[in-house]
Length: 313
Image 1 (cartoon, rainbow, N blue to C red):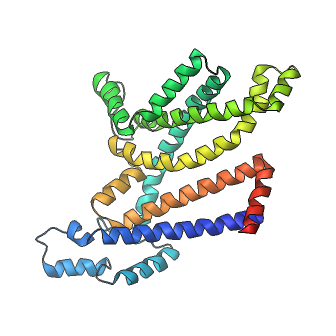
Image 2: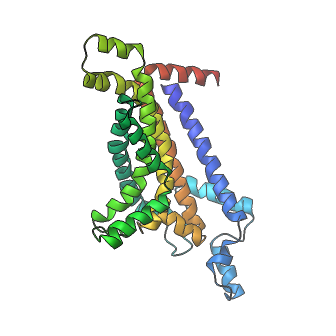
Image 3: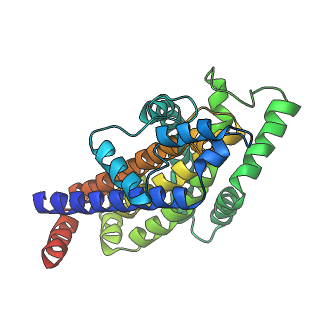
């Protein structure tokens, strides 16, 4: 286990360095941020002052080394827009994104998992076809279109839910449904496939032969064995939730990290963009590492395989 964790930690640091470097270079190759942040009639001496303040007058490799050294000390620069620490802006928005993402994930688990298991138990029946048709509709509809439909129906037509903001629990409902329903559709299809594979195993037939009740077969035998691929699926979907939150938070004016990223990209606030990307990368790497550890705890044979793979590497 220790060798596995050390190997994964090394890969995580390398992945983080590659992502941060790619974002840093891409943002600066896309154009001079001073040209976008400052108006066209800004006096040359004022423009030179800000380019010196933001470090944009230095060669690219010096900017890069300076950024890495500062980041290693926990300094991710200051926002070009309001001069506050970039990481402080991310930490201020992060709880809202965590609330939205966790709520959407819970909604997906409550809707998608039972729907997928039910479809597997009623394989090739009308219930199976209706469940999978609903799942396909859920994940096929564009997330921005779903958000607009929900606003038109519940905020403008019925006037029962707010369309923007985050002041009350009611403000969470529409963003949560917009982000959670597509994930529930994907989860339902994956849960159906995983459950069908497990239901065909000999130990399931043996449990049924011993007279175990159908509910007990599902809870004690099918779901624990189907949970390994489901955990991997959810680990991958963490990235999808973070990417989708940028769209959903923009549509519903939800003050989270996704909306902060969109606004910062629009104004070329490089320090904030880099801090947001770094935070999202750390969250995704941590989530996937946690999923790998849970895999080993559920099925120790996977740990032996990964350790062997690490030794070969």
